[in-house]
Image (tube, rainbow, N blue to C red; front, side, top):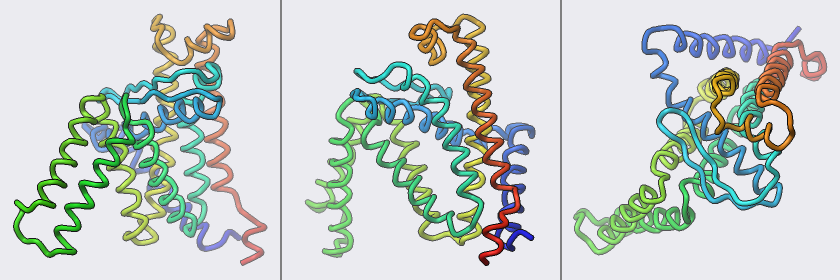
Length: 286
């Protein structure tokens, strides 16, 4: 028989899937998952950026748009690997979260890793400029504000430390807006910080449910993105990853869109199967 922990994981998976499905079909339910769709685009573009670095290229920046589209700018790297890394990266991320949700004890480390990775990607890639410089301004400004508030117990706002800290923070925000990364930074910092906050303060059940909800949401949204890609390809839209693959492989863009979709279905189905199956070895060891 499966362990009690595994039974509880299955129950939470059904709850997480139910939440996602309800949001998909009830009127205006899509608004509830809209921030997570933006986060999925963030993961997609981060996949492009990481693949660029791995294949020896340079990431110039990335952005996420309000219509859930995005763009990663680069110089160098493998065109074929980078083009594939967006859709496959988000699909594999969803599958990995589903697998990590098998046991409750894995939830907190998963949230810590995902939250930290999200903030790191924001700092390294967000916008089209020296985003690390903006982060340093944020850190220094926030440090000055905290020092004024807690170390020196200042009650007045118009103090040298507070003014200097506020100027640095506002300057960082203005610079991020100037380099086109304001929305990308907002998504990255809010989602990353939120995941770290849940990992630090929430109950184990909430942590576990969060991992499973993200796994289901990112997986289904990733498949929906591939479906949208196929529609764009069939309608002659030339600026997409499948068309980039077609230009470098002499295989039609539809082939790549369908291939990514089939691969995503297999990966996610495999993650669900590994999650749901009876883990005899684990059961016997308990």
